[in-house]
Length: 591
Image (cartoon, rainbow, N blue to C red; front, side):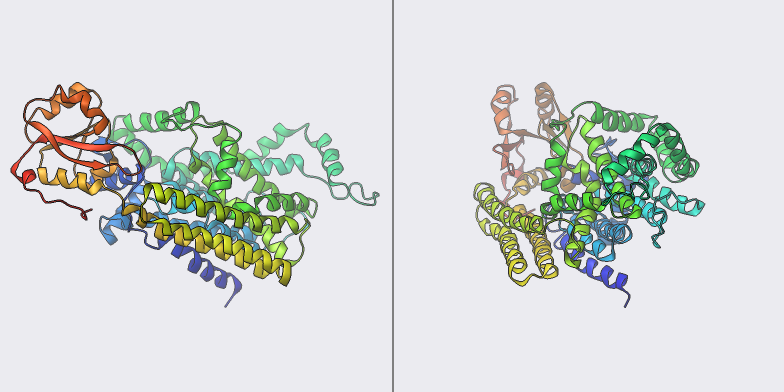
């Protein structure tokens, strides 16, 4: 069996369980998950494959690719949580495989293997890959686009001139930009901006910042810094010329053709069907405004937010980021092709983190597209460590193992505190963090006494994989048992109202699980007027009830109440009591 096939089978065998284990057992919990899942239900009910609707209203938040994928999963598995999340998990496995090929092509086959094992258990990557959101589709399409670019631009034969170039072949350009166009269908303009900036930025940097290894040969020890500075004095006088050359090298006409062929038809069609309303809402509200102003309270410090998000979101492999960056700094002097691979990786990180740091709206999930390249850098340092050709001190790796154990201890205590407060009876979940404590200590002991980097790396990465498998396989299902939304939904079903409305508290999951629209009211007068009619049910927060009670008409009363999960308030359902509600039995186990 060839090496690449063995690696593929191993990667799938380790990554698939993390992303698929008990995927559909927890209810849709994030606000975006039920919106996307219900949007597909409403599109199918309307026999409309073009215009997305949620709760009876046009949904302009995201393009259509995720909806089409979920439609196929509904057809295969029915309308349920597993089907809504299926393609996110499948594309997550695809991203892990693309990460393997990136590491294999840029550095070494075993670097690719370690890279795949680094990204598979990453916390935010697994969140994206186990949720019915377009993040997994975007990450996969961007990673596949850049993987195709690397395949064509970085020759496998490693010639003396290792400077990458965008492929001249038309079909290679079609492959790269076809995948990029799918990224545009997954999440919009970011699907164009990120890959073009990464490919173009890396090529331009290598043209302007390349050095001649024949310089300074009279020195006893070539000084890479001096070589770079010597070349910069010559090359930096023509950055604009290099920019134009790279821009043309990127085959802009091919890129435009693929965008027009794959992505543009749907955007044009949905714009025509909605008289431009979707395009205005999507491009203005959810792209331009998110970049220029903080929306929905999602903000943070420009310089520190995303570095902190990467350390947490890329955990547990993030403990190896410091030695990974120190290692590639040393590798820049080895040869042109090695330097080109490192410049490409660093450009990828700088583009993603830099662009989203400039945007006013900030979310940790925005920088998940750079997780594959972080994994490649980690895979590179671990491969050199296990092969015995590190150019940094092995103490950096031992420090990473100690950090892994310390983080495991902190996670154990954190889960215990959270479980005691929000998930009574689920304190056993804290044992999941012990996996990292044991793994980090065992790996450190193996390195100190057995002096076997391969076994040490296998133990540390294995503990990370097991940690994520248990965390995502057991954690969501355990937390879901403490949700009380079934009490609220039971009242709504049994009261059999003709209309349902919510005042300042609408949760998208109610729409999905009830399978019917719920009006969202903003003014208290609208709430009073709504509930004044027969066969109507109003949902409000308990803290708002005293302000509303004096204005309610006779006969309107509290039909039921339900505590809100992970919040300190309670929801009330108001309406006129009917016979079915009066005789309703308690529903302590109904979902």
